[in-house]
Length: 242
Image (tube, rainbow, N blue to C red):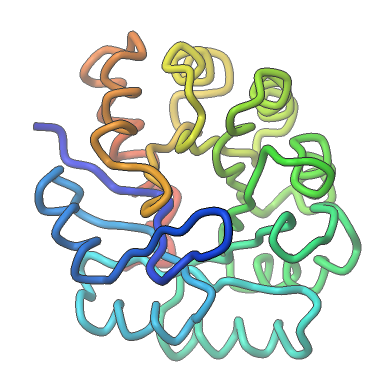
């Protein structure tokens, strides 16, 4: 079985429309079942991610979940990076109601520049988290790897736009959780780049078995699947995950 890095998972409870939850123990259990070696993890509560990293230092790659409307985010990011080995930043324009390329994000992006961090951004829901806006942010910060989570999600127009924007800007990466078309994983691999497509589950919103099958049925060869499942995420995060 091909070993894997899950490039996008959460712990915590998500009420409202979703009504799903994930504990650290349940996440690790699923990782064991589906041969997921490491997980790039975030949560609304950054302290819970810090604790997860402390419990499973070889398996958890922690992201700082940033809210640009909160004060001192740059200081908080620096604290978690320097003291707790956080390896990247998560932004959710949909949840916090800001357009992805709004200048309010700039101090957070400057932290990404300073600490050489990738930035993971929820992608695929209007009006805040559309591919074009994420691409404009990537254009403004060309040295920052920007991962478009869900690569457009469930809307065909947004999926197509995610691929087009990633072909235009070489610091854009595509993560495929929640995106329903296996053929688009192969198209992204062939036209965006073999190193810029990442496997993810978005747990607990999607099940690992479903997301794994999308890669397995995408038409990629076994060596190409290994890039998507493991090598690409390892290369992206290696700088901060030593």
